[in-house]
Structure formats: structure tokens, C-alpha cells
Image (cartoon, rainbow, N blue to C red; front, top):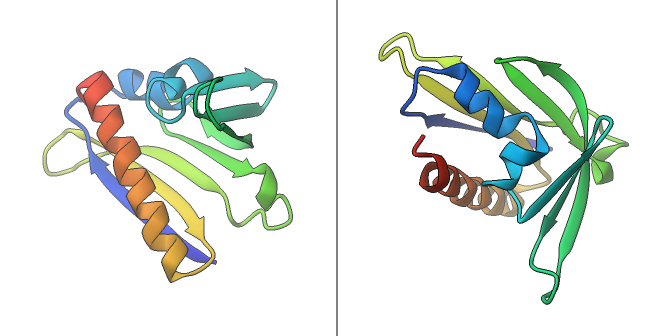
Length: 132
């Protein structure tokens, strides 16, 4: 497993705004997947529209601290709990603005490049829909 960390600068000083976009199905559906549903500690992500080919994956919340971070584990990584994915809000000492730190894991270098591209696209969509 290869750990991938992406630091994304945000144009806000409000952890509450960021938290609403990363900590629940409603917020995540705005930028991470076409449909996100929540049941207990499990989020179900679906990409694609009902009339197209769809991809659905589930992720279980394994650690959460309000206004700080949410750590999840994809259902296909249940056997390797160290392969979590996490979104963490950090304040920049330099600017006072917030950064979103993404941690994810890839099997190899090729998957790491694909994963980085996927996160870059998702973070671009986050910026477009929220202005962050």
C-alpha cells in the first residue's frame, strides 16, 4: 500500500462550512459523487446516472471528530483497515486560512497516479460548487 496525501488550500476561515461539505451525505453529494446516502455509520456513493452505467461503493465511518476530520474505510478494504481514507481540516499557520488534507491509499504507483487525478478532479468540483 502506498499512502497518498493531498493538501488543498481553501478560501475560507470557517471550519463549519467545510465540515458541512465533508461529514455527511448531503454535503458529499455536492462534490464527491452523483448520489450519496447515509445509513448508521455507512455512506453509499454512486457515480453515474440511472440511465447510464453506474458504480456504487460503500464506506464505513471509522473515526470522526467534529470540525476536524472524518476517516472512512471502503468496504473492499475491510481486510486492510490501515488503508483508510480521510478528510482533515487544518488551519494554515501562515495564512490563517483552512486546508483540506486528503489521505488515501493506492496499491501501486499506477493506481496512485490515477487516485491523485481523481482527487484533483473532485477538489476542483468542490471549488466550483462551493467557492472554497
